[in-house]
Length: 163
Image (cartoon, rainbow, N blue to C red; front, side, top):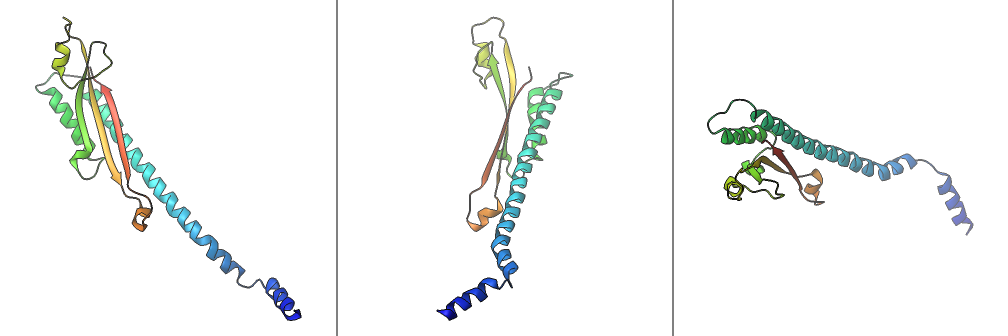
């Protein structure tokens, strides 16, 4: 019994190697927190890039709507918006959708057919024109490679009233 008490008092007073053991406990968590912080900053940066692209497209749509009337102006504006957004989204063309919508008179619903507004029974045939921009993207975080989590899907949608 005396030997056991002596052994415990000797082990309890020995501090050699304590820093190595503490580092072994703390270092993995610090590394994971660092990698996680980096990944989160990458996710936020990607979302910001897509939002900036949508804002840029809004400015282009509003600027493109001003000025001289040209042949096929609607198609040219839609193509210009689509081309300007391709630089923001890498890969597939299906990640950028630019479509034209109309709201007839004071209705709350929108339609993609301008003829629906002409058939509304109103002689004045007033309608508002909108451009809808949808940008989607997918991002694979690093931690998915080790079996944690899943891909992150981005979706940025803007409605721009141009008329």
